[in-house]
Image (cartoon, rainbow, N blue to C red; front, side):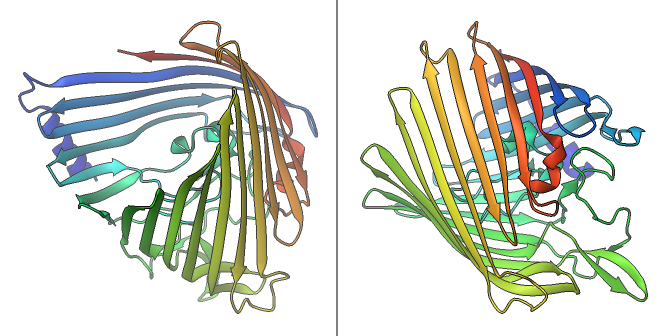
Length: 400
């Protein structure tokens, strides 16, 4: 990785007499106060800078992100916070664009699929869940972990193709034990078993038929979510193979846009009460979007089915849904939003976010709101039932 970064920086040092440079980003200051359990508060600062240097057929993109978080608080008192500060060169990649094809090389991310909160085919970049979905629920690009990739895109008359190679595996990042959004009962600090180490490869084909955007996907690689298995008398953390075929679509229908994903996983690594298993799985998503008279409505529903699921699982089907409503006033300077997320596996669980935002000046934005969780203690959202909170944040956007 170090050699790749040095190579990219070397490209940036080429003669740039005719080059163009653009920068944009934001500064954000946020404060939250927990409303349930052992009440605590936290402070959060974030700074992001996106830069682009272009010259002829070449482009160099980078994204720098810095964050500071105050210490977590748990029932036992103050907790040492290993996430107190982050400085992350999130993206650094070079692009060469020709007439009918282009390639990109470096640290980057790729978004697949049409789902906003449900990742049926969005499999190339694992998530950073150290603060669950809260920092980036409105901008999922900050939730994905970037990784080194080689990407080639070929543009035909009727078909656009994308080929992806990610040589190094990466796992989902979870919160440390005792932190606000730590997953209950998840093992910590286990040795890793690299028996299944392999590169991730992917293909996407994109076409347009009778007013409908169609995408097709093939993927083979490793699941980012580790499994915990016992080998030679000790528990280890293991990544296993995952391969899939999928499709997605988007089509206007009057005032609405209809979109969806469909996927079949030939291998889905699955943690079970008795150990680990590989289970075929099929899933589908249907979404509806409407923007009219300063109202924005987004509705989604998903269902997934595990084929030949082991008897140790209580249920082979999972249902998820979301509903989001946003209303703007005063030429979009004032807005209010409501988001509801629902998950039903063995039990139901919910997450709700209600917010009110105001833009006093063009590049300033102030937002306050409430985030709440409910459900069983081992459900997706219910495990954070004691993390309901009110928040206030101020953001300053800039560009130069």
